[in-house]
Image 1 (cartoon, rainbow, N blue to C red):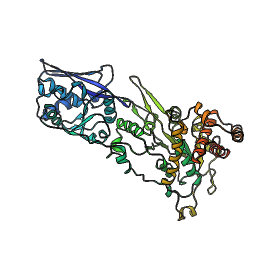
Image 2: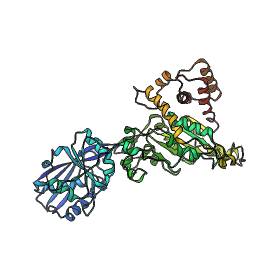
Image 3: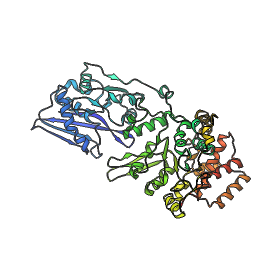
Image 4: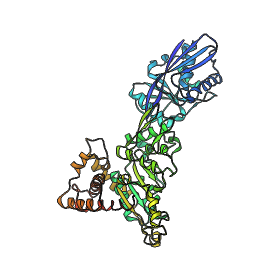
Length: 519
């Protein structure tokens, strides 16, 4: 007897329907699994067999053939265990178990991994699967109870939570009800989101804090250059605290990526099931190129995608392999990354704010007003050689952060808290949302050239300032465009409809290190 059970697979950050076709026939006992399964899917044969037996049901004695359709798409992970078990039991002449008794068989799906004892275990990617199920018209989806948190935010579908295979069987037989996911909204949990860092703890570094505010207001990339201990890392960690709150769409986008990557339940939001704070990713400088951009045998998202709608922090920038840094150039422009492998090509979103820090030289004291540099010009050149001009071009704000003095650190003066700066940032972002109402962008840094020409008009004096800077600093066309975007953001922070000469002068000042710290 043949039974067809619906399940879901993952293609990038979207789910797609997988038909689990089960045929149980009279023949010598065997278990065959087809449909391009990977190793983890093939191993499900043993998990499903033991789960059925240890749940008190009889595994059919005969030839069991399972096809995962569409057969030309590679199936990965343990998502299909539950659907296979239900299909095997339903195909074993157990009519009471047929999903058609509960609702239309094409409108219910099963997703989950089985333990040998019949327990239904958590799987990655439940949120994107449920969102895709809603779009495809499914009425019900059964998912693991351990995925209840992220399942609670999906509307338009009944989500049932399974603890064991026996729970699912009793539900399909109509002898027992299953727990349904409790509906929640982002507003219910957003108020509880807190950050460990705050700008009020950062003493001094007023220029750097000003640049941080501009970066948050316009979505601009930032490079902090200074000696060890000057507060670069602390400043970077404060950036998410002054960025606008995630919208519902942004929160879902970030959660989908983290759910697929398996990092959702190892983050600060593990008890929530939804990313409610701006992601902050800080990979070590030994991270490989694939770890940064994504890929591997299963084409998983990398750090730049995990930082989507948040911050990617690269500490000690020259210590990263140059090849790893250069791959950032395309996603910094296009806000997405295409991971191409032999058997699959997947596009992941990668719209992040890059904030990087570095020492000015190997000893860290070059240019310091309080410390003496002991590095030779050759040593400094070798140290900075990994920072190419094209990469520096894509970083809008270059800031020198010198060591803070004792009087700064011991001062009892209250510094401006992140909440106050965030208020100004949100006001500037509100202007940008109004400006880009008809466009699919949300901040100045994402403007296209046509938008720059329309929204970054300069008067004669401002034009003269920018022309002089362009010729004196030998800037590129990309740097010219980014200066205009930064000037637009500075004007927004001031509530000015027009870009004034002082806005252009400040924006140019953040590009004066272009040639000093690149080779």
